[in-house]
Image 1 (cartoon, rainbow, N blue to C red):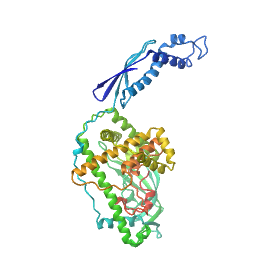
Image 2 (image 1 turned 180 degrees about the vertical axis):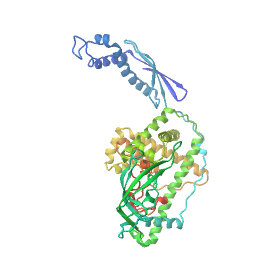
Image 3 (image 1 turned 30 degrees about the vertical axis):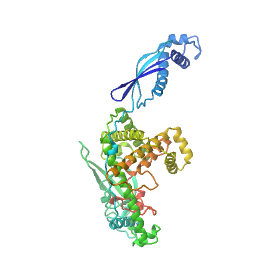
Image 4 (image 1 turned 90 degrees about the horizontal axis):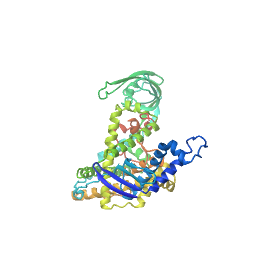
Amino acid sequence: MKVTTERLEGSKVALDVECPSKVVDEALRSAYRKIVRQVTIPGFRRGKAPRSLVQRYYGAELFDEAVQQALPQEYIKAVEETGISPVGDPEFSDIHFVEGEPLRFRAVVYVKPEVELGDYNSISVPFETPTVSEEDVDEQVEMLRQRMAELRPMEDEKPLEQGNYATCHVKSLETSKMEFDQDLNCMEVGREYNFIPGLGEALVGLNKGEVKRFTATYPPREDEEALTVEFEVEVKEVYEKHLPEDIEEIANNVGKASAEELRKDIKEQLMEVRLRMAREQHSEKVEEELFEATQVEIPEVMISGRARTLMERFMNRLADSGMNLENYLTLNQVSLDELQAEFLKQAEQDVRRELVLDAVAEKEEVPVPEESVDKVVEGLAAEMNQDPKAVKTTLEIRGALDDIRSQLRRIEALNLIASKAAVNAGTPLPPVEEQENGDDSENIEAKAESVAGAEEPESDESASGGETTAGTAGDTTGQEAEPGEEAPETQAEAGEPE
């Protein structure tokens, strides 16, 4: 095989390939063996006609089949020989395919673009060390108190008031506008729910067993009027919220010997959370500086391909949650074009980040210890409740281990630059304790799960735009929770519909 390469504009490469004549001959023989079993020629049983007759009657089909077999195979060999990194399907032209003569063709394909790195070693971004005040601890104690609340059935038959909870059945009375017919557990009376505006307010004043109609008004989309849908809600069960009386009871509930020990533990955990967040925010600023100093022209095929992948994963998550795309768009007041535009924007950011960090990792010769790969695999195996060795084998067969290594290299490359940037600013990063790589590690596991055939972890918000909460006895902080998350655990059983 003879291969010559030519760099073209727009991150394209042209391969001019010449193969020995035996490639053409073998492709024709293989095509004959396939075609002869599919056609009928008078005087011969199917599969028994000689090649000369098959070529006489079905010459065009024979040559098309031979070309379709030969070109991809020889193209792959040419790619391996030249060492280019294609990022899309090739376009073939100038095909010379004649029996007894060498095969010649031209293949033009997009390749990974060259990245022109700036002087990233001079980037200077100060690291802002976080603090934790006693007021911050007080807030976390109150959040714990709220999370430890119990919902008890209301003993007296009295109308629901704001702050009570109800299990109810809600259905749309205008299915042409929106299909909705579900039981919702432990909905907070008076609270605003985006997926059905006005539901929380409609519950105020109702008694157990009562039915009420109300109208939900969704904000208008661009160039569209506001959507109004009539719903019916039936109250099935009613509850009151009961809170722990004092901090000592809260401490005992989470296994702490005293209020002082609880507050100390909360302060340490808050600092750990805020340090992690501070490091992430610092890394994001460093990334921005790095990207501004870097030149790279990304082929459109890379962006559109990544956007399709993001959309496919999103659609799978919607299907797993029992929601269709139309309802999602309606509930979240977004159009399909807007959603696809968001995926394109995210795809471009993801691809740019990978290309730039890959270039840094290659220049700095960043290593990836196999122990780091095993740690990710073990975390994934634990999520899937499977044997780590079996999961690693599956990932290796499907080519996902190389993706994991690449992502780990990017993390280390960014950590390297972030550390230098903090030192340049005179604020060295604090030491990192032996633990995970933050959200990046979780993203690696999520992507690997999708390759391994498992469900991809997701937040409840990703599918429904909803909010759910849950507390655990072992975690004594709310992890900077939003005010809307301060609700009893039982609400996590319902929240917005999934």
